Image 1 (cartoon, rainbow, N blue to C red):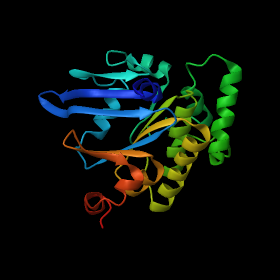
Image 2: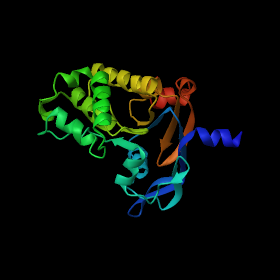
Image 3: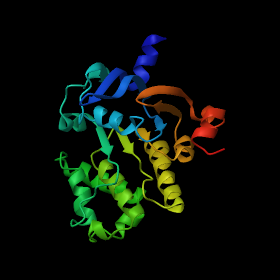
Length: 244
């Protein structure tokens, strides 16, 4: 049983501590993501959600604990090496290159891929997932709407042929209607493309809708975890995060 469980796990974060200077941002935190699974991380501002993603992607180093990707420790690896392994992050605030065209932004996502056939297949995947980008390939990214820029940021990440997609606050700054559209596309990527995802999101309603499991963080610690369908009806979640 143990072997079967470990084989299913793509990412394992084991009791990590992370500091900003003398401030402890993450305290003995453990989470995991299985192959083909979408997992949500929710919590208030300052709970450690973005810090967790930055630590997984190599931008921050844990002072203790370990991070395993398919059984291999990545806690001391450089961010570019982690991307090569298939862990790709869509940062908070989108961060597209505003003066480059949509196509140039997408091409940058595939900068590590020299195989022209694969690059072409990835571009086809992105444009079929986000048809609005196909209409704007020659348009400067800075002229896109907020929702279109979020599509571009996710599309650029998909151009890296990710195995694990880290999504940091994809609804930030978007209207409810556009947020609903973005999350529908995120759900499509998970169900149709079978890409594993770790989703950090303050909009708990949408996060619980698209994920299979959820971890709730408070002050850098694990407060609660479980299947998303169960936590949607938990009184503590309803009161603290869904306003009910």
